[in-house]
Image (cartoon, rainbow, N blue to C red):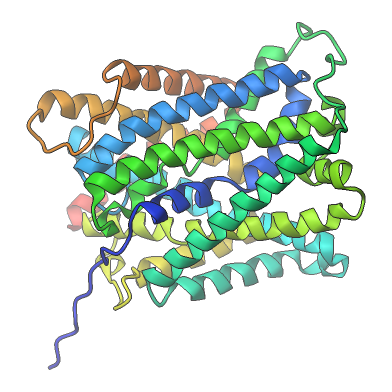
Length: 436
C-alpha cells in the first residue's frame, strides 16, 4: 500500500505580502458603498471626517497589540489561537468559529457587489446577477487551488494597482477646483437621532476596516514572522487610515453632503464631478477591478481559519489536508460551497453589519488575551512588544466594548443572531470534544 505524501503550509511570504493582504483585504466594498449611508446618518462633513479619523487611530492601536500576539504565536488561523492559549479550548472554539463565520461572509458580499457593478456596465445581465457572482467565486477558487505563490503574487499586484487607482481619484477631485462640499448641515445637528446616527456610522466604518488583522491568518506561512509581521501590521494600518481619510476628504470636497447621502456609489459620482461625465463608467470599471483585490484576499483567509480549527480538532481532520503548492484544498472547497449558498440567500447589508458585529467580539477577546499572556507567560519569546502597553491595549479593549454595546443597542437583529450562535456553541463544543 502506497503512503500518501504529507504536505504542509509553505513559508514563502514576507513584508510585501503582509502589507498587500492588509490593504487588499480591507479597502474595497466599504469605502465604495458606505459614504452615502454615513452622510445620510451624519449630515456634517467635519463630523464625518472625525468618525473616520477616530476609527483610524483606534485601528492603529489595535494593530500594535495584534502584532505582539501574532509574532509570538505565528500559527495559521489568526486570533483564535491566542484566545485559546489564554482562555482555554472553549473560548478558542467559540471565537474561532465566530471569526470563521465573519470571514466566510466576506467573499459572498464581495461577489455580490462585483456582480452589481458588472450589471451597471452591462444592463442586459441584470437577470443573471446571482450567476455572475457565482461565476466570479468559481474563477477565484480555481486561481487559489494550485498553491500559495500564485495567490500571493496576485494579491501584491492587485493591491498596488488598487491604491494607485484610488490615489488618482483623490488627486483628480482636489485638482478639479469643484469645491462644493464641507457646506453647513442642512438641518440642526442636535436634531433627534444624531447620536444614534454616529453610532451606526461607526459600525459601518468598522465594517470597512474589517481585514486590517489579516496578517495573523498567514503568520505560519511567513518566512520571518518576528520581523515581518509587526512591520506589515503597522505600515498596513497606517496606510489604511491615510487612504480612507483622503478618499472621504476628496468626495466631500466635490460633493455636498446631501448629494452623497442620496448616492449608492459616491466615489463614482465624485469622479464624474471631477473628470466629467465620461469618467463615471470608467470609475465603475476601476471600482470593479479594485474589488477583485479584496476578493482575492478573502478567498485565502477563511480556508486558513478552517485549517487551524481542523488541526486543533475543532473540525473534521480532512480540513488539514494541504496540496503540494501549500493550499489547504479541502478547507478551500468547503469555503466555496458555503460562500455559494450565502450568495444565493443573503444580501449585502445583512452580511456586512453582521460581520462587523462578530469582529468586535473576537477583537475584544484578542486584546484581553494579550493582557492575560503578559501576566501569565512573561517569559514567552516576544519578537515585538506593543508600544504603549498596557494603556494602549486597555484603551483598545474599552473602545471595542463601547462599540460592541453601541452596536447591540442600534442593531438588535445582529445581536440576536450572534447570541443565538453563542448559545448553540457550547453544546456543539461538548459534542466535538466527545467525538475527539
